[in-house]
Image (cartoon, one colour):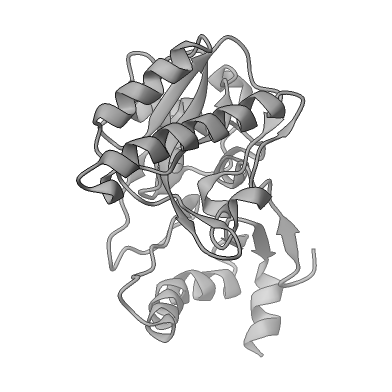
Length: 269
């Protein structure tokens, strides 16, 4: 691979691809954090999300948090008619247990930024069912919002994503030795694979074998965040240039760039 040449990641499972080299469903991984005693089997995330309509489209707000209330009971009753049981956990994450992995492609929350609802609907053999359930939950929730004292406390929809089951851990080989992250999918991966895991702290130095999730500060400017990132990478980049580490990968949620020592010298020059 040439220096700085990006390689595309599976947008539905970039964390698992970075850690194991293969896509894995997010729902059973985060389920291990929310319900460690009931995480086996096939799970689908069903998260409450916000909807913001305007003249052009309906926009999604996946990061909103909503407390349970009458709306959640109504949604549970709706899904029960489909033979589905919704469980909302204290983390704000929702789950549906399935008998088999859904034959649909779902858009994960991190791919929703700037996306309208029409361009983020499920696709695949089972898509018609999940699209219908999305529409029905939106209609039901809109009815609750109309009569609520605080409509903003009620989500605009459920969002289905991350469905599937995990293979036996022995069939997955970790590409990393430690995970430094707070992302629930990455933490769930560490738990499933038995890898050491800790939250990121300022001043931590990356070491060989680490996968580090670097958190930006939303209250800071882009320039300030870039300076923090450069300072964080300075030690790893110097070690790469001197050959003390064999490879450095820089990744977002869509692409990853891989650098060897020769690339570091070329860019440094």
